[in-house]
Length: 104
Image 1 (cartoon, one colour):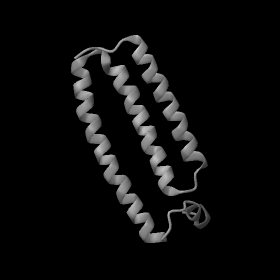
Image 2 (cartoon, rainbow, N blue to C red; image 1 turned 30 degrees about the vertical axis):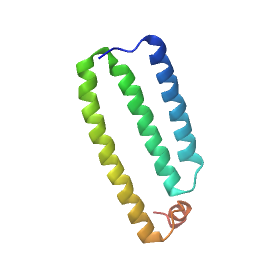
Image 3 (cartoon, rainbow, N blue to C red; image 1 turned 45 degrees about the vertical axis):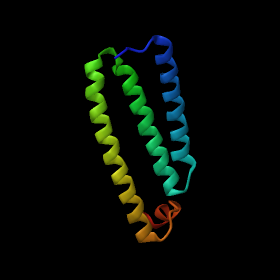
């Protein structure tokens, strides 16, 4: 397994920072619950990209991180789908402003 050079690592870190900014904007200014959850997903993926770039110091460490990160992301997807289903069953809408108005 080849360790990435500094130019590629820099590009990946900048990409990760841009993704974090987009996700923060989406979580802050969107009222749609699904868009907010997708923004959280983009934020998690940006953090994962950041961790993977930083873990290229050791190939064994990268393999271990890969297994753990795949497990975490697949569990996260299951939780997000369950939250969306439960939210839609209760309110029959996916607009997050109804949560703020009811004081939940």
